[in-house]
Length: 445
Image (cartoon, rainbow, N blue to C red; front, side):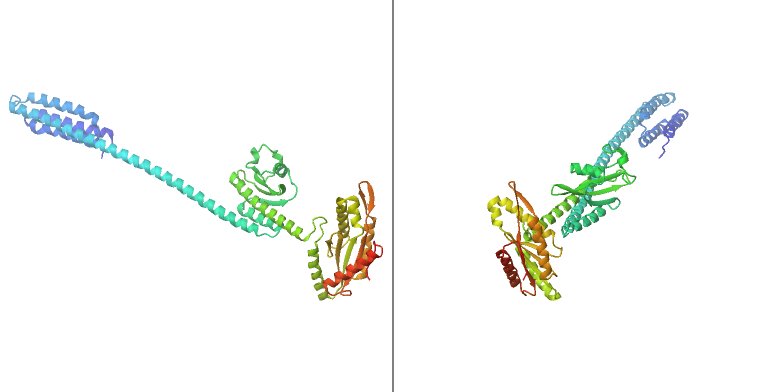
């Protein structure tokens, strides 16, 4: 197929000129040569040069009528009829070729339009596939994240104390942001960024330190081009911070902030649950007013101490303490004054024994102390010391200064008793003797 425009035009004109010369030179063969002009129109129909067809058609028609005039056969009616017939057939050929070209062009346009439509549909389908694929990937990522989040919740929820939660929290943060600097700590704010979070109790996201307007550029280090700080909220207060930073600007996006907030919320809930559990557990073994161990806890500890002492063949002592004339304080100054006395006595008793000893509120205004590894005489000396401190304590109820005293009964295991009930009974009897002997004294024999 010839693509050169000049050749496409030159070749049919060359054929036209050659045929025209032949017609003038051999006019006697006019009827045989003239039909060859049809090759020119066939050429045009194959090369889509329609703009020249009418010119060539006009020239061929003119030659068809002019050239025979120079021939001796032109006077013949039959010759003229044949000439007219050939010109007419040339026009018919032109018409048919032109019609075929038009049909071909229309078909080509339809095919082109259909191809264009199909390409458009294909592109639309490809775009739909891309959108669905993007949606599928996003959905899979979301499912993966939720699965990991569920595992994280179970992982953190399995913690038995707050320090373990903080340790696991650090592991999770480093897992999700392994290319960033991570820090998890409790306590007061360490810099202006944490102070901002502490004051507002809301997370802080800094995408690019160079464009940040809330803080001075001097507040950022070279390793802090972007950062996120999330508060660890515990019972409505900020108990600590989760902090991640990067030396690369635009490292963190809003999605990262949401992930960190979810992790912080999980940890906060877990810590609150542990604190509430510890509180409930404490309330179960400690007296709400004096914060001393309850009678039930005392009984359990006394049994343990008896077993331990028996195995180790070491003595221990039990102090039973009763506040003197406590009912009089309640009747004279009211129950609030009585509660104040109980709390003060409890603080004195707890504050003047060792960590290995055990102090409990036995009931009402009566207390009990287990002194590990101490015999009766040494226990009596400690009891005397406690009695003196209590005697020296002063209270002010309704403008009246007053004080309290207490009586002590001391019993030793295994000298005085070898079982729990006997040991308590001996200590109670000696406490009763102290009360009967004038109160504010220690009895250990």
